[in-house]
Amino acid sequence: MNAPLHREIPADIFNPAQALAQVSAQWDTDIVRQISEYVGIPCKSPAFDKDWASHGYLDTAMRNAAAWVEAQKVEGLTLEIVRLDGRTPVLFFEVPATSADPDVGAAARASSGRTVLMYGHLDKQPEFTGWRNDLGPWTPTYEDGKLFGRGGADDGYAVYASIAALQALKAQNLPHPRIVGLIETCEESGSYDLLPYVDALRSRLGDVGLVVCLDSGAGNYDQLWLTTSLRGMASGVLKVEILTEGVHSGDASGLVPSSFRIMRQVLDRLEDSKTGRLLPQSFHCEIPADRRAQAQATAKILGDEIYKRFPWAHYDCGGATAFALPTTTDPVEALLNRTWKPTLSVTGADGFPDMGNAGNVLRPYTAFKLSLRLPPLVDAAQAVQQLKTLLEDNAPYQARVTFESAGGATGWNAPATLPWFDQALDAASQACYGAPCGTIGQGGTIPLMNMLSKGFPKAQMMVCGVLGPKSNAHGPNEFLHVPYAKKLTAAVAHVIARMP
Image (cartoon, rainbow, N blue to C red; front, side):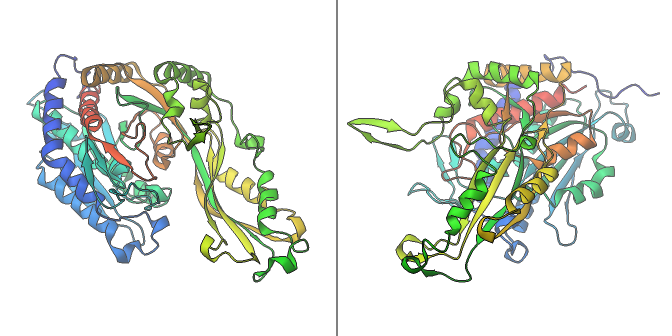
C-alpha cells in the first residue's frame, strides 16, 4: 500500500503573514472590483425570478466568475460551467494535489490523499426596501472598508476568496491536497437544483475530507468563527378565502367573518402569539450538551452584543429614547433561541390593497408567506407535511384554507472535530486575527451542508463566513466587511495547508 501523500504540515512551514499580505493586496487591487461588478448584476434566485433563464443574469454572474478564475492561471486548474436541462448552472473547478516529493508523478498525486471541497453560490435574495438614500441593492458602494450592495457578502465573494486562498498556498510552494470547487446558483431558493448536480459530479468530487463553505456568519469581526449548526426551514403560502369578491365592510362585517381573523385563529394552532413558542412538540428537539456548552462559551465572548447588533426600532418616551426589546436579554438563551429553537416568521402578504387604495371593503382573502425555521435535528420533509395538516384541517367557518408548500431543507449539526482540524482553526485564527477561533450556531439554512454530511460522513466542515454584526444579509444595506474577508481568505489557506 502506498504511503499517504499528505502529512500534517508543521505550523512554521506555512507563513501566515506572507499569505495575509498577498491576499490583502489581491483584494485591494482586483477582488473588490470584481465583487463590485457582481453586486451590479440583479441575479436573483429562481424563487424570486421565475424568468431567470431568459433574463440571463445568473448566466452573466456565472460567466464573469468563470472568466476571472481562468484568468488567474492557477497551475493545474481546470474549470467547467456545468448545465443540466432546465436547471440553474453550477461552476465546477478542480486542482490536482501536489507533493513535497518532486518524484511523485501526476497520476499518484491525483489518486492519493483526500479532497477539499470549496463551496459558494452566486444567486441573490430580492431587493427588499429600506435602503439608505445613497445606497441600493444593485449599486456597489465602497465605504470605510465595507462594500454595500446585494449579494457581495451572501455569497458572491466566496469563489474569489477560494481561489485567492489557493493562490496563497501555491505562492509558498506548499504541498496541498486535491481541491475542487462547486459554486451554485440556486441556494437562496433552497438549493433544489443542487442535488442532481452533486449526483452527476459525484465521481469527480472524490474522497472529500474537508469542506470549506464560506456562506455563513461571524459573531464579531475580531476572530475566526466556525459554524457548528444550522437551522432547517419549511416555507410556503397560507391562504384563507371566505368570499369570491370584496364587499362593503359596513354591510357585511359582523356577518361575514374576516379572513384576517380566521388567519389569526389558524396560526394560533402553530404559535403561541404571546411568547412566539411553536406549539407542536414535533417541531422541537433536544439541544445536545456540547452545543449548550459552546453557547455558554460564545456568550462570554459576545455578551449583550448578541442582541444589540440588530437595528431595533426606537422612539421618544418622555424625553428619553426607548427601544424595542428582544425576546430575551440572557446571552446564552439568545444564542439558543436563534439556533436551536423553531420560530415562525411572516415574510410576505397578499390580499391587502396599499394604504392609499384601502376603501371600506371586507377583503375576500388573506394570504401570508410563512418561513418556519427548524432546529438542526428536525426532519424538514416531515415538518412540511405536519404543517400542512395542522393548518388546513377543520377550518373555522368552513373557510377555504390552503397551505402551498415551497419546500423544506433539513438543518445541520456539525460532526465532531478531529484534533488536526481544531488545531488548524485555532492556529489560523491566532495568526490572522490575533484571537482564538470561536464557535457559533447559525439560524440560517445552507441546504448543501446536510447533503454533504450524509454523503461524506468523515469530512471535516469549515463552515465560516463574513456575515457579522449589522452586515444584514437579505435586508437593506447589506455589506461585505472587506478587512474581515481578507483575513478569512488567509485563514482558509492556513487550514488547508495543515490538512493531513
